[in-house]
Amino acid sequence: MISKADQWAGNVPGPVLEYPNDNDPLFRQLLADIDGIYNGLTFDELTTATTFEGKALAGLYYADLSKPITLFLKEKIPREPTSHKRVATVGRLTIFP
Image (cartoon, rainbow, N blue to C red; front, top):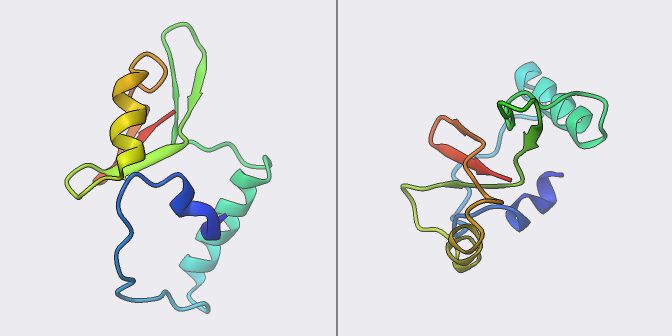
């Protein structure tokens, strides 16, 4: 999952400033949660929104809009605004379906 994250990221990749400690229990829990969401065993409450009609919208593309974004995201989101409405904002990360 993490190895393919840049495929859906809307920001230009930058240098990694610091790697997390593999033995940190909070980091290990985060990885377990990500695996559960990726494998369909855990419902993703952070990047999923429900419309007024009760339809769930899951996020796929994400970006920190205060940083430079990729050409793909610049073209994809504005060209299909009804398909790519903002699903959620988590911190500085904006998530689109």
